[in-house]
Length: 100
Image (tube, rainbow, N blue to C red; front, top):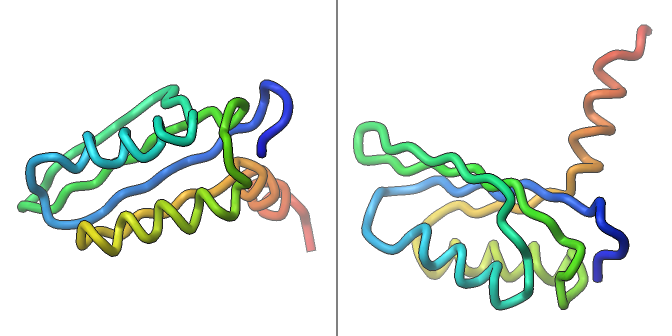
């Protein structure tokens, strides 16, 4: 479970557009007390893409379990759903700035 108030993650969704994608993803997050802080979605050529910034502070399961649940939801819906902790992006940013 997440601790403290600064636990954040990004959820990405990609796949064929259809009714109910946002509802299904939001419901899964809500069921585990993951709060959606920001959401951006678009549809181009029938392909749906979405990025959600989420707060994990009240999440009721460990991060690895939540990641697995989101991937399984994606499989059931025929979508690619990924969830990554913000620490991954912070580490990539630090590595990108390091000089050889």
